[in-house]
Image 1 (tube, rainbow, N blue to C red):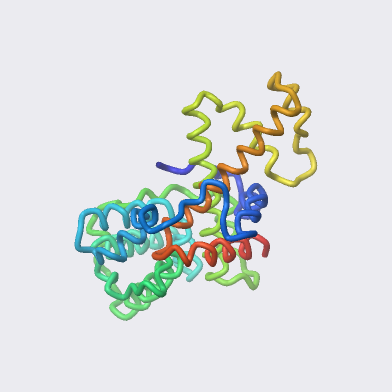
Image 2: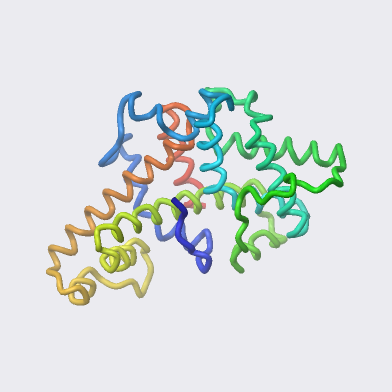
Length: 271
């Protein structure tokens, strides 16, 4: 399921939108948290780690992760001083190599976080590209991952000459992609239930910014009572937190890594 297009939002804006999720990690659990090995074994990255590229399920799981998280790979590549077109070619070549499972033997469960693995694999791939000085057409002529155009804010971040490192930008893009994807999943759920307008209104309550409507204003707009909006927003946040945990779970190899990844996400958002 593809995330919604938030091309006009910067990573900072997306992070601010999602500031309320930090309560998820307060006691190591959240509403709707899946517990136990039975639920966890089906997550995308765990399938990849366990199969080590020897099954169609692993290939499908890896491709799904790549399609969601391609943006921070492309951003990192361009931050190395590589132009847009060559950056697309290299990004496609990296995914082609990754989807052929040439590098998955390096995965270790104790370091089985997709975020960390992807960056390490990319650094190795870029170094190998430089050593070989590849001039052949990359990606075997196929566009494996749809590389949409980046927004003006994303291009500005990549081209910035300040002290922000490529790794920091990578982490920011990873965090904003996670949050963007979770909001997209939640939007789809509300839309399927015929509550698209309610979603659009409740989402406005997430940012802690001047000008955001009050719950009373939303109640008037939707013809609801204040209490009904308050309860609806409570359920909205609970489901948002639950989906966030589920999305994080898809990118780690063991249940014990979920809390660390959530804490890392929060730290990135707050910087």
